[in-house]
Amino acid sequence: MDKRIDADAVAATIEDGATLLLGGSGGGLVEPDLVHAAIERRFLATGHPRDLTIVHALGMGDHKQAGTNRFAHEGMVRRVIGGHWSWSPRMQALAEADLIEAFVLPAGCIALLNREIGAGRPGLITHVGLGTFADPRELGGAVNERARRSGHKLVELIEIGGEEKLRYLPFKADIGIVRGSIADPAGNVSFVHEAADIDAVSVATAAHACGGRVIAQVRETVPRHQFPARQVTLPGILVDHVVVHPEQRQTYLGGYDPAISGEILRPPGEAHLDEKPVPGPRLIIAKRAALEARAGASVNFGYGIPGTIPGVLRERGLMHTLWVTVEQGIHNGDLYDDILFGAARYPEAIVSSTRQFDFYSGGGIDVAFLGMGEFDQAGNVNVSRLGTKVVGPGGFVDISQNAKEVVFCGTFDAKGTRYRYEPGRIVLEAPGQVRKLVEHVREVSFSGRYALQRGQTILYVTERAVFRLTPEGIELVEVAPGIDARRDVIDQMDFVPTVAEPLKTMPESAFL
Image (cartoon, rainbow, N blue to C red; front, side):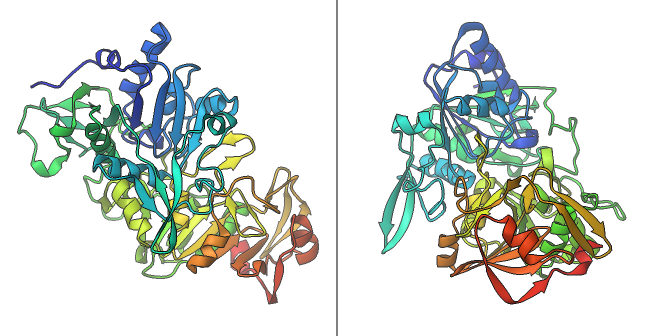
């Protein structure tokens, strides 16, 4: 049976009210944009399909029109369950205007729930999400008023062996949409030229188990039995339709780079791809946070400021001793940040994000370096709700609740902060207008209380001061040289921390 089909033809088969599982990640990683565009084109021409439910684990889009932006039309989507939203400002706008039911769950929980649905099991039972916005005692994942009014339930609190757990509830999936590199007419799909596998197998398995259909976009097809079995990531039994897109880009960078898909080794002497930040708060934070890395550790670097840390560690000769992973399934290599976050040049291994989240949930990370939007007196951190926009945490919750040590990295405040930089020190000339050390965070992406229960080591590193989480709350442990602890730190917070005795000075090396 030849499963090849035109994108517009397969888009015409999607019914109103269907639930679509979307595989892929930001930066265009295995993002089947030709299929997405065909579905959008049909809706704009006919008004169908409409009232869709969209489920995606990781963020998808280019901040403009690709990814979940393709579905961001009033009436086209009724409900979105996403792990990360910021790649799709159009979908964020619909959520903010209360025109859709907006739900956010940890990205790993969505990926693993798809796997459980595919296996016919009664949902995902895990500790991940306890005490956060996903906990039904908080928001249960419902992040706008329309979602809360709907009464739609995604998560329930249960007890197993005397311990609290969350059960992420299974649902029926009608369509799974994924992308690979090469397929044969029988639907066997290889990901050999892709930057990542992401969650394609769990998406396809879930849709197939529900009696739904799986659409796989690829760049090319070959006759059956023309590529080795070891190169098949998605077997044809799970694929119903194959859409060929000869102009398919590997990432938003365009073209095809075998270094990104891990098909070639690094040439001797080739320089590493490290961010070269200008001097300022971002570099200060990275230099101080990097001191928490130790040789032989399994580490994770999150999006934003943590992306600066690998370059600092490489200068110190420590980077080669670490085992680095990101949630998209990448092990080691030169990690990209910003628009291509989740990909790397010369990775040592590429596994599915589903397997990566299993590794994280089992405590596979020794030290995680993660960003922070704001934190409060209980040690809670918010990265999933900035202002009125739905952002979502991506893999933040799955990583932060399971790493043995977490180093949160973020500026002390925002909007208008001014420093004078002197050798080995900084002087605050004007504090920012937006405080980030607040009494209560807007939304709990990381629970300080739960971290204490699990015995995690938690640090909060800013350019002005360093704090740690203790059973008594937040403790100020270091202050930057040139900064007055009372005037420039404590008086600029919405709560009063305890102060370590002795209060240390942040190392001058971070300010040179």
